Amino acid sequence: MKKLLILVLSLILMLSLTMPSVFAETDAELDAEEMEATEHAVPVFGCNETLGAWKRQDGDQIEGSACLTRIISRNQTDGTKIPVVDATGMDTLEFWMYVSDVSLFEMFAKSEEGMNSGLELSSAGEYDKEEIAWKLTGIWNYNRGDEIVDAEWCHIILPISTAEKTGEIDLSRVNYFRIFMVGEKTDPGILVKIDNFVLTDYEAQKEAQDKAAAQSVVDEMNALKGLTIEKENYATVKVQIETARAHYDALPDGPKTSIALSIVKVLRDAEKALKAYEEEHANDETETEPESETDAVPQESESVTPEETKAEENKSGCSSVIGMSSLIVLGMISLAVPAVIRKKD
Image (cartoon, rainbow, N blue to C red; front, top):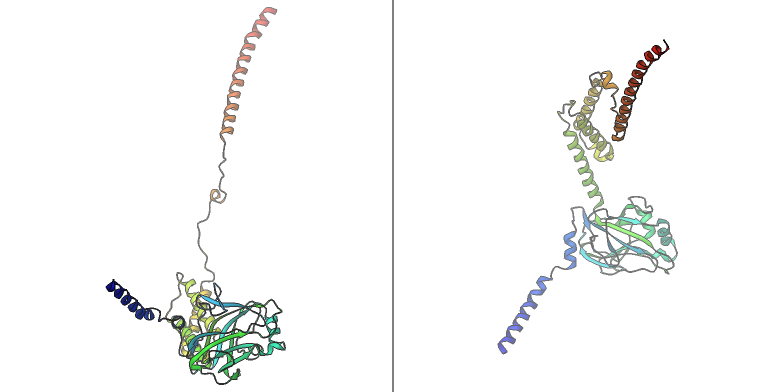
């Protein structure tokens, strides 16, 4: 019995030592695995899992597999701790936001009690310490992204330099977030969604994005080199050339002017070749064999039902009987007339 007890205690001790390693992968580590930081952008938190009062919603997102959503109304001041994020060197907060009623949201922001409402990030694990914050009106005033409209995803870009500060945030350990409203809860609330919530080195990221966009267009133009336009590939080549032109025209001025003129000439030469081919073959017509009168006006075969066939047979039979009867009558008349004549004589 004593040996059995020692064995059980030994097993319990072994389990107690191994359990921490099994569960060492915390929520923060799991979230970190979902986030993909780049040289110029660091996700503040993942939007694929519930985060405090923000609930995961599938099927309506900008990136990943879900967004975060909640109803925000006045007197909701709760925030949430997030996995520690190192955003050293980043200077801008960027995210996507969906608001069901912009006018109500803005009214909240501009109300007397709502002037203290806003969006905050902190490195102290709580609000009003080591934080940067934008009042809700500041989202309109300092946003460098899309105009905020009802029931549409809008790209919000907020420079950290425009944020109000309480103490000094340590961007190497950002760990708290909230969007909140101060005041009495006398409204139905607003549906708000957020996604792709990141801190960025805005100018460096924009430069990298512009460079990538320009390179994509350069690749499309280079693919036009040496193309021969023929009847068999005309439609495909036409789409290829028009797509390259559309993408080139859509580039902002900066990345557009960075493309060498010799590369742009490849596109222009391809467009000239396409135009020349279309002019040369503008009057081409497909030759076809002339149709005969029979082919031009196809003869429709009459469909005869069994009932109609039977009726025709009956009609034919009746005609035969009538014809035979007529012959018999004529024969009898021909025999009777001479007899009548002889009797008179």
